[in-house]
Image 1: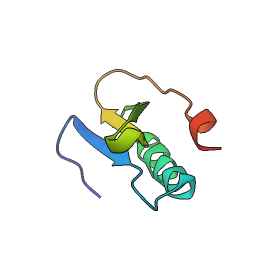
Image 2: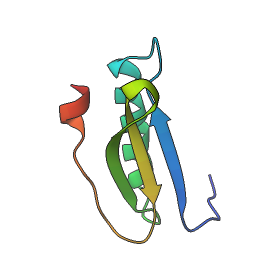
Image 3: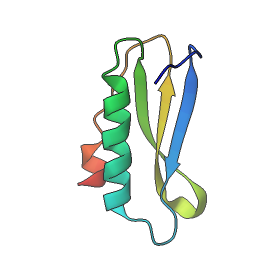
Image 4: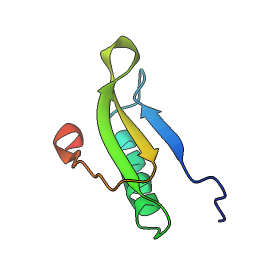
Length: 73
């Protein structure tokens, strides 16, 4: 996969019927993305619609990785 943009955002929000299993899988995918040498991953938990916990990733120029397992396990 070739990525041409230097910075972009990914947001994953839990919705009705989507539980922590889906959020764990989303976190796995984002961690795989972070392993790519050209990408830097910022992760933070945030609240989405209806107070559901979400995961927000910003791929940009500074290395910041916040451990989110406390929210999903």
